[in-house]
Length: 96
Image (cartoon, rainbow, N blue to C red; front, side):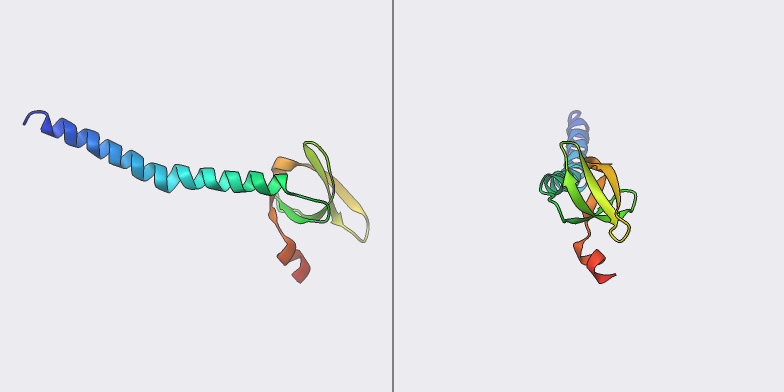
């Protein structure tokens, strides 16, 4: 009976780790994988939002960067790192 509390403590910590993995680690890995896939599938003409909140459309894609046009009427283009692209904004940009 002296080992019973130790076994229960080990099981408790194991259970906490399992819960932590399924509610914290696994969803974060899935989100990171989806973001990486999105960045790899970017193409010219896609409408995007940067992590800084800048909306624009992709003009050209380079190895580690891409050129985003943020004001088509004035031809304002900015170079961003691919990692700075947050998400697809096609639906929001067409509504404005």
